[in-house]
Structures are given as C-alpha cells and as structure tokens.
Length: 393
Image (cartoon, rainbow, N blue to C red; front, side):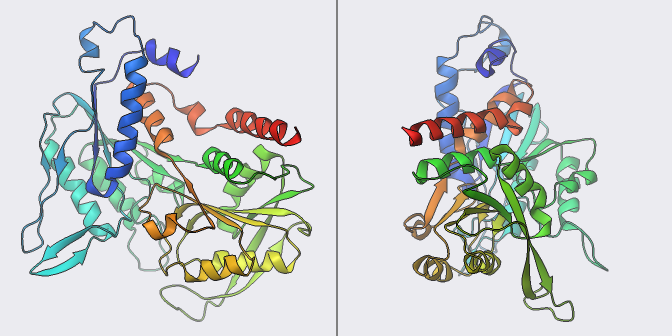
C-alpha cells in the first residue's frame, strides 16, 4: 500500500508531539515543517473521530527547556501539556556549540551534558505521555559498545537506563555496532541507514558519474564497516574493496592503538571513481590515509560518504587533501552539529536528513511498518535509473 494511503487507513497511536532539545532545534524546525505540510494536505475519512483530535496543527513542537543554575546544575521543564501524547524527543549529543555558565566560567556542553538533559525532559513528562520515543542520531557512547578487559559498557547502560525511565522506542542512525540492541531485547531499537540519501545527494552534486562496475567501486576503510559497504555496492551493482588496518597493539596513543599500515583487499582500482563509505569521520586521519592509498593505486576520483562528520581535529587536513587532489568530495549528514565553516567548504556536500526523519516519525505515529523506509532498494534504483537516463541524453 502506498505510504500516504496507509496513513489514511490507520489512526494515530496518540496525539503527535515532537520535543527537539536545544541541541537539535534546527533539525526539529525542518521536521515540523514537513509534518505540518503533509498532514494539512492529507484527507482522512475518519478525521472527525476523537482519535484525530489535534491531528492537523500549525506546529507539533512541544515547548521544552533545560535551564541551569549558577552552579551548573540543571532541570527539565515541559511548558505545554503532553497528556496522552505520542512524544518524539530529539537530541544531538555531539552539539558542542551550546554553552552554559558554571560558577562564572563558560562551559561547552559535552555528550554527557546532553544525555543528562534528555533524562531531565523524560523525567519532566512524569508518566503523562502515552508513549515516549527518543531520536538520538548519534548514539550516546556508541564507541564504547563492547568490553575489553575491565571496562565500562556505557552504551548498553544508557539504553537500559532510558528504557527503565519509560522510553518505548529508540531511533538512531548508523549505530557503530547495532548489536547493542541485545541489551534491551524487549524494547524498540532501530539503527537507520543513510544509504539512499548519500546516493541522492552524490548524484545531485556530481554530474558526470558512470555508475557501473567498470567505472566505479565502493571501499570500506576497515573490516568493521564491511556490511555497510557490501549493501552500498550491491544496490548499485558495483565491486567493492576493503582496507585492513594493521595496528601496533604494544602502544596506546590518545586512547587507541596507532595504525601501522593500511593493507588493501580487492580488485584493481586504477582509473575508477571510488566511494569510501563509513559511519563517521572523527579526526579524519584514517579517511585521508585510505584516500591517499587509493590514489597511489591509480584511483580517479575519491568521494567520502559518512553519516557523522565530527571533524574533531578541524578542517585543515581536509583542505590540504582537497588541494592535493586526494579527496574530491566529502558527504556527511546534518544529523549532528555542522559549523558554518564546514558548510562553506568547496569539498563538502551537505546531506539533509530532515525529510527522512519526518517520514519515520509520521509512520511510527500511525503505528505503521517502517520496513520499506529502512530498506530503500527500489527508491535507490529508481534514482540511479533517472540519473543515467539524464546523463546519457
């Protein structure tokens, strides 16, 4: 059944309310605009039913704030009624641009601070909402997802803590390891892929691509991201390759074992455009090393597509790599904070995820299946076919 017909054939789980925390305010505005537009145009045969009370509104945003005292302590405040609501709380734990005062000094909010604010808003709901869903694009502590020796299991602990507070569904994007769902097997957990959006914006941003196995190849920068690259390559009908990171396990530098060399496994890349697909760019050293290795092997153009562009060490290395012709374009999403400096870079393509997030919220609010949204093979192939037809003409 087409998506909009499915929504007119079902009733909402509860009155829709989205709570974008300050860290996710821009994304929240875009999502709200889509929801208002779609629901205003949608005609439902039972819209006079009590279940549709508040279905069409000027905004679905529930006003919330997380003020802090001078000592740095905070509280969560919901300024609107949420009784009986199907709430979707949105938080970006990577937004380091938000500041607060701590005993007269200015502090930037860390992921820990954002997570604490999320719990405060859930606590402020006080059990009055009909269902609480958390949309956390970058899963808090997802890089600490497994135990090696005597370590904490922060990501699993966070998921258990949220579900114990009454959260029914947790939606994240491209989780570092989706198997963290094992910690909350009886609750909803979705790790959503951004494959379709990457392909869409790459095709919009580059005019002369040849999408076939003779001219293009998909690369995984490490063995951990193989599944992501295999899916990407299969839906486009391309070959794929992988780099194995050989590390020095006798040393620890900045909390990790340094990479000694990148060993390539795959077919010849000479003369081909390559797409490096990964979940995040942190410092970016590994991504630039992989791109350099591909250039040494004769690759034509190098495109990097990652869900989260953290750029923890700034943009200088990427500027240099672009000037040297090592990297042609980098695609990252707006699921995490993007400084204005990044948006102005000539090598950067911004992948807007707000429409996709609005689709997820709209579908879940109707208690409908999101399977076709999570597996967009048909949409990808349609988009590629349209691009090829336009290019050949």
